[in-house]
Length: 184
Length: 174
Image 1 (cartoon, each protein chain N blue to C red):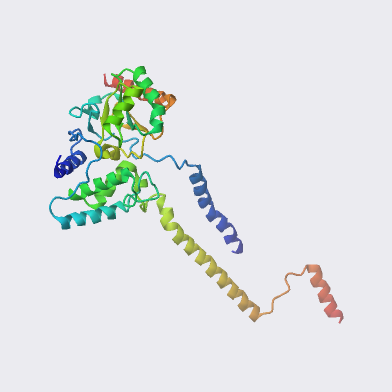
Image 2: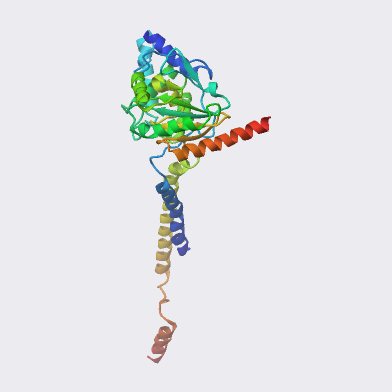
């Protein structure tokens, strides 16, 4: 029996070491998203340029939706903005919708930002960050790729790159066309 | 816009059926905190409950701080949501579930005792029990050995056979 605890102790330490190894392998800056694989929360938010008008997620039913939270004070938002412009120019708005949600910012600052950098897609405000909280937004930029079925496929919590956008949108478009073909 | 009306707008936006219109505020930025109308005792109670629930939730920006402690704007907005939900009569469990649904279990400062989290809860107890068992076993074995030694002098079993034969021969010769 003397040898029993000699191997039992290192064996007991193995799960702890495995857990430590797994933990160290994780990128602590990346945060989990509870929304991926679930239906995107519905919203209706005021248009940035005309608060009497509103934009709803259901307005884009059946389309791939790229929902981007941004702010004029957010430096990475400036660097990702050309990618969003390219997204809008590349894909058919009948298939892919891009919606920008202004996060914790004044509308006039948001409008100035768009005036300087350009952008022709629906832009909305989110008073009290109610929708942002429902989406589990940590900060900006954050981008949600939502399939035509309304399910969140990916939440990206850094500035998007063109590769990331193209890969995810193309994949969701394939699924959309597949779904449409199966439905017809 | 009157305060109470703004509070109502927040509540409607939060609890309205999916697709229902969210009230739009022209100012949009810097919405006033929802305040329970009229009853100051009720208001103080809601403030206290808001702080208690906020203390159990992690601030998404200042991640080592609770929503109640953090001065980040998102934390204040989350407190407003908690306050609004309390005014709607939601329980602490429902409010916690709402935030877990949006942010995942990560948002809870005290992880739930389920899944991998069980390691955190059960690990120290199991380690303590295992350690106690090993120590007790060692003590018991030590006592048993002492008793054996007292009952019968220890045999020189560490001697090699050749040594033992040499000693036995020497005893015989003497």
